[in-house]
Length: 247
Ligand code: PEP
Picture (cartoon, helix red, strand yellow):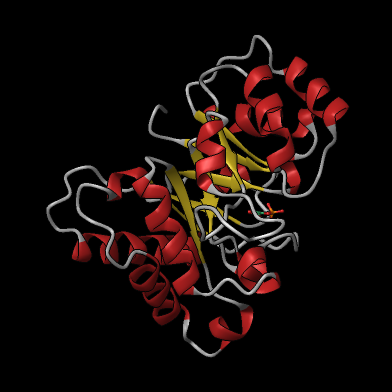
């Protein structure tokens, strides 16, 4: 279980009091799974302070610039200054709503690696791309362009999250077969690019994971864990999910 991951993505949800309440619930909770939370910039320090040290606390994004005249942006240098060294990059909501293309995602990844970040790199196809049989081509492109110039000795700082866009926040998870085929393809693609890397790069699945489908999803052997949005927003539901995954 030590090689398994369950990462909450709170997106733009929860306020200070909710976070305190959430953390109280997990105060004396120990898990064999690697747990983490992706939370808003404003609450990163609070979350880091309140949750057990073993949990990894991820920023949900950072700027492709390091510093300068970029009003409203947050740089990875600022995160480092606040002792945050984990981040989620390339989430489909950032790609689709904030127009982050593969090249911007790549710039952010290279910058994060330069400053010793541990990253979760999100990839995944849209419904239209899946229906047009473009899934594998899209995934390969996202991997190749997103990881452009990432060196052999840096790749172990990256976890990949396969998140089909059509399964995110829709209540419709991909099937176990669809997930197996995509994650297997991702792992083979990474192996082709980084043949010398001994450690396998973990690949998570994300998209409508909940305490009802986790029993089926956790049996997909190639999947190293899950990135969870909606079902991570309520402490009871998230704890239930962790316990079911552990069982
Ligand atoms: C996500 O946005 O990363 C995600 C997995 O969301 P949900 O679980 O709500 O589909």
